[in-house]
Length: 132
Image (cartoon, rainbow, N blue to C red; front, side, top):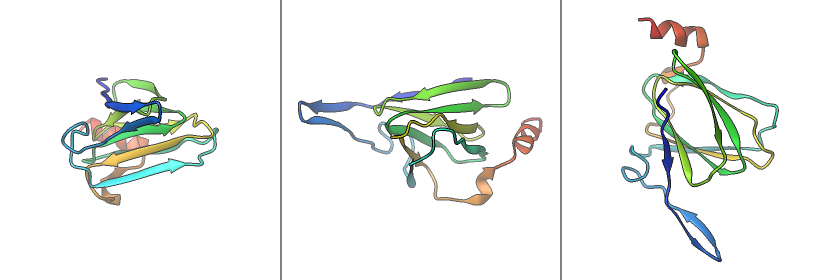
């Protein structure tokens, strides 16, 4: 599985750090939607879906969480714990998030507005779609 982690340029000095997110620059798509998860309990798993067309970039702004990724052929676990690194989630990639630190803030940038018809929420349907 070819997972792309994007290194984001961090600027800063003794006052702190700044990372700018710019579409078509360090985010390789036009940003149409941004959302973030926080206050997630450590023993909770989230996600459990893939998208037909949507592409996303996930960035842990604070804390850490893990991603379980499945492309239908291979499964991979990825730890996100660096606010200057983004995980690309292309269409057709099943993803689940878990092992959230108590302070985790997970920001997700997407190239389209929310569309329920773009979701594949059944892992069986996801696997069946790969065999077509």
